[in-house]
Image (cartoon, rainbow, N blue to C red; front, side, top):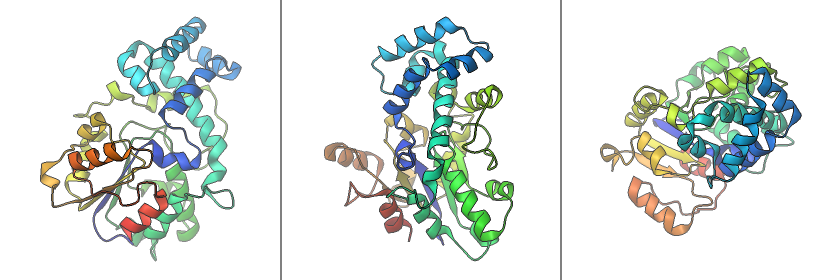
Length: 293
């Protein structure tokens, strides 16, 4: 069980072991989607104009942006079609990777299971009392599905009860309300539209009137912060209130650094008060185990 107040902050790398894409991978999937017959049909059902798909794809492909989110921040005229394409791709990824959440097809770096082992307690009541909050920049709901499934198994709960008890904040929105009964299942135009409208790209996420306010409040009251699969972009760090002078020397701050060059990671640690990770290439599960146990 977790006894010290703790906040986990998740970036795209946190979902990657489960088959979800990083920024550039999602961009490429979106570009392929505009030529997909099924997506084009759903786009037309959403009152989209067919000719705008080609214009959107050409603009994105030649923009030099490595992520759709960054592209839409500079080209807000494409927000509608961009969000619809991202939702379609990500819901497809949820379908394809649903089986990876559980044995025997789980990933080698199965940090969801390690987190559960840390959180597991004798009862649902004691589970919920643990001082843990999870802030995620990801749209996918794979962590919810994993935790809801194992909680229902261990505590004989209804999925809705388990879902309502999870301390997860999606600061950029999500792919619609989580529903265990249809997670990773087929979806129609209505479900896709709901998912796209639930996504908040960068320019839509007002840091003063959104889940970012709640996120900063959680961080200000915690004793330990752990970044998982995070990219530490200055824009995102500042939205969370970092660098946070009031936390310096008071709150334990740690994070994973896989894929980040050594010098860049050293500067990130210095700027944001993160304790240097002695094993930058470590599996996320190992970092969870070393930090939370």
